[in-house]
Image 1 (cartoon, chains in turn brown, green):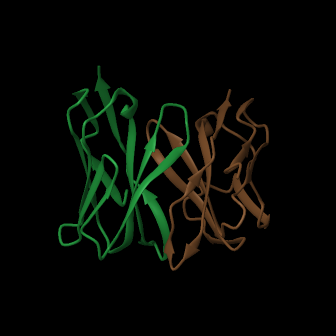
Image 2 (cartoon, one colour; image 1 turned 120 degrees about the vertical axis):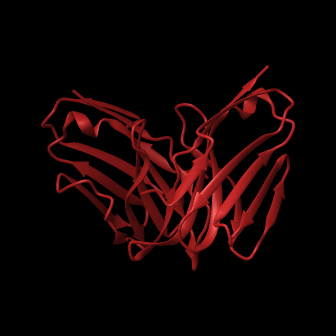
Length: 115
Length: 113
């Protein structure tokens, strides 16, 4: 198993541009999480899907952020328009949820820098 | 506010010594998980302890859980330079109306050779 795959690994963009982050979870996992990590705020849960359905998006900062999971093997996190304060490492993680949340497997992250 | 809070924020010890990190949380949990993050990498799961368990071992790792105090500890025995990393606790709990895994701020552990 290749683990959770994220792309791109690094993204540098200018303020106002649209950014799309991609994630392929581990096959068979039914839960997918998007996290953002910064020095100031630590690791924040942005949104959580279970069986491709968004369960909780209370962590999404504002309307500029949106996430989709069209099928069990793919998810996107989009920022439009991007701002410098969005600079962070964005992690995707997946797990198998059967009542309790099982251990999550994290992707390598996408380092986003918005100039 | 964070569900899990680690203590200390940073810990520096000599190789061979034991390292203890603590985690406190606020609500009832299904389980508590510990993760490690090496610099610039994703998090790696270390160990999971359920709410009805009090102690678990995995190699040089020992985790305890005290649900009455809403706290957990992670002990790394006979530390090695390769253990240098950040360690996070995460709680599987109902938070803001949804069951989710919420991470603490982490403890930065440095093992000095």
